[in-house]
Amino acid sequence: MTDHLVLPAEWHQQDAILITWPHALSAWAANLSFVELSYIDLTTTLSHYQDMIIQLHPSVDLEKLLRKLTQSEANLSKCHFVVLASNDTWARDHGPIGVLDQGMTKLLDFTFNGWGNKFEAHLDNQLNRAMADLGLVVATTSIDWVLEGGSLESDGQGTLLTTSACLLNTNRNGKVSRAQVEERMASCLGANRMLWLESGALEGDDTDAHIDTLARFASVSTIIYQGCTDPLDSHYASLVQMKAELAAFRTNDGVAYDLIELPWPSAKFAADGHRLPATYANFLITNKLVLVPTYDDPMDILAIELVQRAFPNHFIRGINALPLIEEHGSLHCITMQLIEGSVNFKGRFESLPGTMG
Image (cartoon, rainbow, N blue to C red; front, side, top):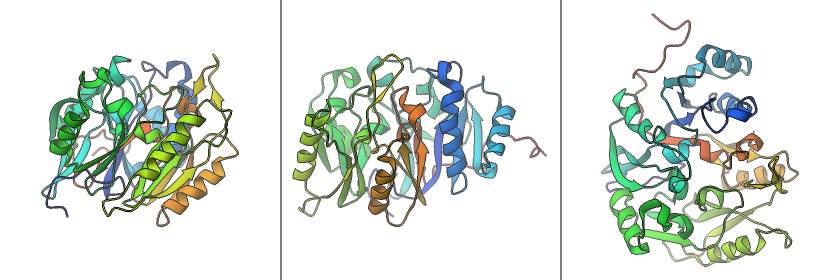
């Protein structure tokens, strides 16, 4: 238990994984049945290992959804539903960020502005407070600063990994300096060191190069990252430069990080021809599982094997993320871990048919 302020690593013990279910009033409207396949796959797989909190827009038919999850053999006893209006489904970025302060769990509610006002987000920005008001999670602390969960990686010991393209973008907090950002991350998240990537970005990405699409901590001494080995690919120069930057970083102990390079999936395109941001770095770490996005690609198997190398004490499962990249995100983007001490499972979740007293 920490005796100071820290943003835990993703492998810190979790109460639950938070997701926001897609609905007909979100960007998924045209592909709703397609993307639901990914959400059902995720929920079915993960619910056999740990609890999930599932936010449902009022337009979602809960009984119909329960039938689908029952047919897929999800463990409904681990699925906790709450009806709340949302704009979209990117829980990683609108969800609360959990920290440990003097050993106590706190949930921080940063401002979410739709990745620099690219998309409407006023409903998403109210979800964390609504969850707390219903008594489902501990009280949230509102912070007047735009920050998304996908823009930060933490080693759990005070080091944050991020990208300049996102955290210094004027579409988040105006014109801020690196020093100002570092001061804010120190005061809010306990960061005592920040590693800034200057290179690396994916075509089709709406987030201005979130770190969770590029490079991730697998331990305090290991970083697993998205590589590119095709010199003819438009990403090649940027990702090779990113690799060099990662190689130059040092741990708190002053030694180079162990680096694991993920394979490059073949290019994926939307129906209108634009490139989609397929990345294996967008995996989710849970208490017992690491879930890896897959793309019906020959590199899927190797990516899973490499993630297993990075997380030898976890089970590894692939989740079909092809539907998710249609809206320019992937598996990690639709999930947010709620760290131990966050959730009140006796709160006002939806009663399921057959469970009402």
